[in-house]
Length: 142
Image (cartoon, rainbow, N blue to C red; front, side, top):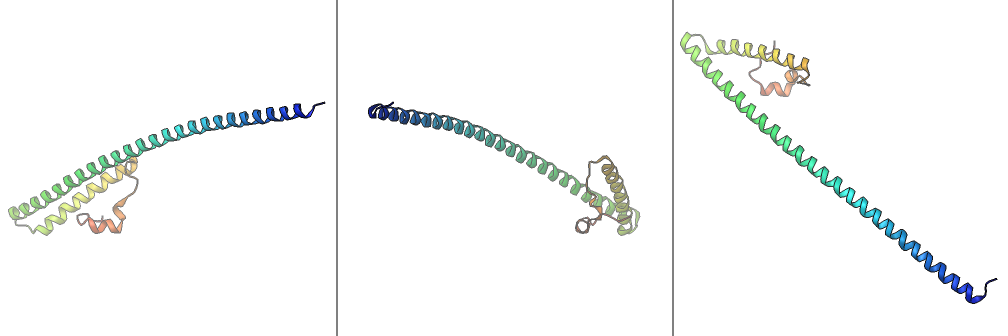
């Protein structure tokens, strides 16, 4: 049997042990949270690098697209100049020459698009897009 003094001592020892256990749990929890925070920080850094790479890839793709647009525009302008020169040289109306040439360009374009669709390098056939048709005044429907 415990006397009052021993019971009080035991109670103090239990309180100290519980306090130490709480401190140990708290330290372990803080260590776990620090580990989780470090892992989360690494994930955020990785995500930032991924986003930066995606932005750089998009900028490069846009640059390539803009370059191709410039090539296409220059080609069309030169083609129209050649059609006008052809009309002057032959006396044939430039509208007739333009219709024949643009029909040839349109059929070649159709062939190349059909091949690209078959390969899977073009996923959507934009030839039937009414909005795009307004922008492509050179394209002649088959």
